Length: 372
Ligand SMILES: [Zn+2]
Image (cartoon, rainbow, N blue to C red; front, side):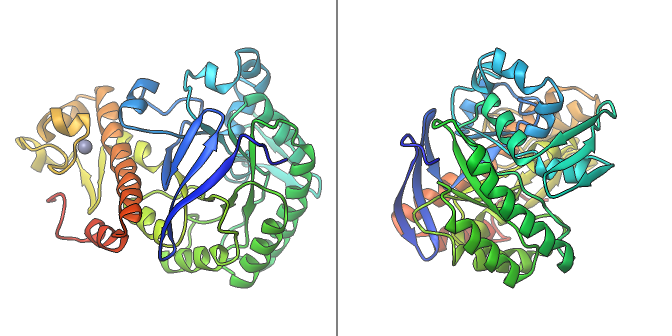
């Protein structure tokens, strides 16, 4: 069901890079956009106020985790995810498929769905396309995802089977979807195999999804394979609907994805790295634990205008980390997410101004940014 409250305006194009606006019931997403991941209905160590201050517009939450705990019924009883987590802006939920295949040790896949053991208490659980959509309707995100199967990228036979299942499940998700205030996106699979990706993109594009996603990347393939796959798929996906590259989010991945026509990104990496004392910059990672930072009066990145870089020295951040203070995760998460949000915003401005190539080059240049 394509809801009237969703539409995508393509505002500018430069090469394959696009700037657009996706209208949702909880606000407009100006694309390209990066979505911080709030796995358990929270972006770890940050409040919604922090997220607003760094200019986040879209937050992703994981259906698998919320399905197991606290359960979709409780979230619905509390007014849905926007109300439960107090994020009044757009939210995206994934389908649970990726986590079932990556987190659950024992799982049994059949044509109808997947039976698996909860990683929390070992209980037997089941997700089907219909259950995933019902759960996502109870959670109430603006963008929800079709239930898919993500196969290991290099296994041709498995990718063929998983792709066929993903296509059958995509149609069942469309049938099961009832809420007009949610946009259901279809997912292209097919590993690193161009023929499979081509067939998958054609099949998913032929269905009536208001947006499309590329799944099964950033799961072990190399960058050349990732870029080639994006190019094969985006040559087929329609121009007039948003394209979401799932689970991809380093500074160079964003630039390379945007250059190939991606509009939406998400990744746990910025917040996960922050909890492991690593700051992301446009030119690489900075390990704040390093003793070289002990007396360093500089911010993480002298070119960054985030709260952390405006306020704190590397020496202070290193002290917090050594002392195992919780604030370190918060401050480094603010910086890491801000870095990716700024790249998406900068790319958008550059596309609108017709200077994306210069912007991309300046972002990827090894001479600019942070000294090690
Ligand atoms: Zn910063």
